[in-house]
Image (cartoon, rainbow over the protein chains, first blue to last red):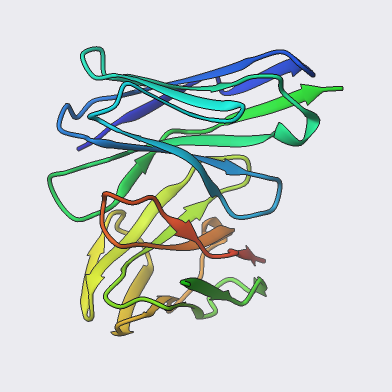
Length: 113
Length: 112
């Protein structure tokens, strides 16, 4: 099955700096990669996604890059703000059976004011 | 627009007691439905998923079960809870794997 690894597990940055979270996946057939943000005690929410026919996607301060050859994708947050503090999860779709996603283990991001 | 409802929000249950968590989706038909569990400070573990009424796939063998009695209703159950069942349970849906999940608000279960 699919295996998604996510690094780092914790990340602290100063407000205004950039944050980068990286994920690798094992199934070369995976073709959809969403990112979720989970604030403390709340549900995960989709913040950005990328499909395998695109190398990069940007939405304001958030961007995601995908390297299909190396089977890794990354989340980039620029000009970080305290409200960016949360746990971020990457995921990959497994195309063999069903429609489920497999998640990385999460990155706890802290933005220090 | 589509909405997903999950209840209850919090639950404290004694060991050995039964469990029933319910999730419903509005505004769409034939959604894919999922149950995830998140232990404190941990990642998201897929428990069950369903692509249609009566179709349940289990990812992790345990004392939990799931049912889908109606198209937009997904139920997570247990006959006898264990301490290790404590966690944050999340229901989610999507149309298919081309789309990301929308999660329910979650149920925080504490087994005592």
